[in-house]
Amino acid sequence: MLRMVTETPNLFDYVPQGEPKKPSDMLLPDRHPQHDLFICDVADAVLKDMLAHMEHPFYALSKKPEINVRRYEHNGNWIEIIPSVKGLATIYDKDILIYCISQIMAKLKNGDPVSPRVSINSRDLLIFTNRGTAGKDYAALTEAMDRLAGTRISTNIKTGDEEQYDTFGLIDAASIRRKHGRNGRLLWCEVKLSEWVFNAIRSQEVLTLHRDYFRLRKPIERRVYEIARKHCGSQASWKISLPLLLKKTGAQSPLKRFREMIRDLVNYDHLPDYSVSFDSESDTVTFLNRGSMHSVVESQSWLGHLDGETYHDARTVAPGWDIREIERAWRLWLGEQEIEPKHPDKHFIAFCKSWFEKRGRP
Image 1: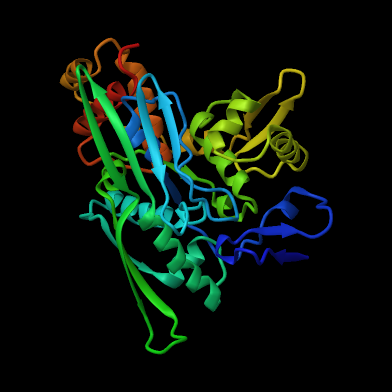
Image 2: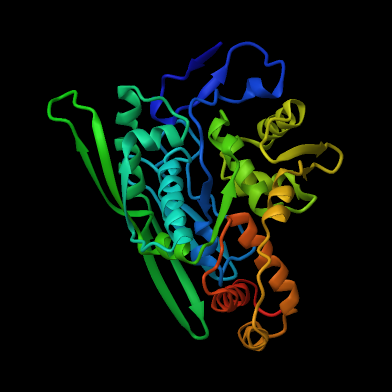
């Protein structure tokens, strides 16, 4: 039996009654059929030249509104996430961005024109994110839009002897239409993504999520899955210290409580795509690929051919790198995203350029 935590119903935070017996007990019911899901790695999108080795948790995991500024610094560079008076955007508010990104990615795959303005059928969004469709669920979308629009990101970027200051948001605007009357149901929304987020999508800096992402009950579980998905990917395993993993999540919990949560992930083994092991002696967490990510990538890798001149141009934009190594990563990435490039040579060169911008010389 399930109960809903009523303190903040907009967070859709469900907790189990009693002691779960199996992994499926730790997941929410699969209320609706799902589609491919995408997540925009917004931290890397803007910070690839300054904080490439850090994760930046932009979204609140707490049930209570977070109104404190988050600041991260590294080698003289910094980033601030500034909430509005209504609080920092939550990891559940992020569902709206995931939906928008999925719509844009679908259009890009089909070769259709895209725009930062995305029209949303409210019911489709609720079904896509495995939520209910009652009146309170529609009302929660409006609150989520407010937090997304109110959260701002500020950062400095140092290049040579110059320093640049930028400030931007997750979404620039939102328009909502509902039926006439005080209790009229919300019909549709239009979201204008910020240029920062939209450019990241057009650069295809996204990852495919497992359909059970929206079935994870706890905000911290979603965040841990995102970190594993990015860093482990299709590798066999990935290891990280517990304190560093806690830092990457952005959770405010003490290390002792976080350790208990990781042990729950180990015991119930319900995280999508990855199983989790924990070494208490070294205080390290290891994510083991279940094989679902690997099999999808290998079965869908793009098998087309590139022109010989393309490799010369690729070496020019990614000096010092083994171009064949980048090509393998590119082909696997195309398969993972289910992309059939219309102009593969240009696409590969753009991929190499982005690769070099993120990583520099090897």
